[in-house]
Length: 113
Image 1: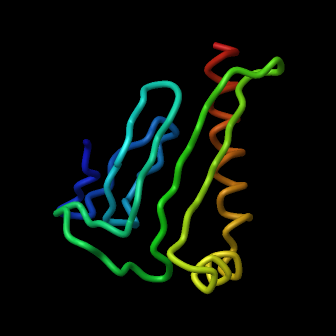
Image 2 (image 1 turned 30 degrees about the vertical axis):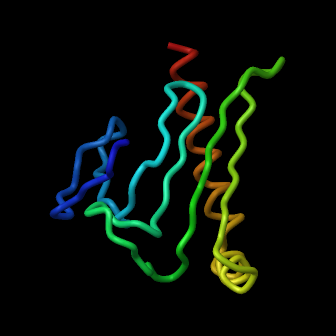
């Protein structure tokens, strides 16, 4: 297992020239190169149970073959329906949609190079 440990929020340079500052203390539960990634913020990088704000969740990203490119599936699990609704009210679909679009742009630019 790989923990996403960020003892200090030090900006890391990104390929685009901007800087990435982690906004969550979470862990990767499963990393299957090129096909699957599962992470949670319900456990922190010190492997302690966490109650992160605004919503604890576990996310699973699954990549697969598709005739038009790559099949991308994001499954997010919440502890109960109230938390799921809260995440949706906070812009879950818009946020994950923006991430998906950025990932597609990156992948397509890599393919064009």
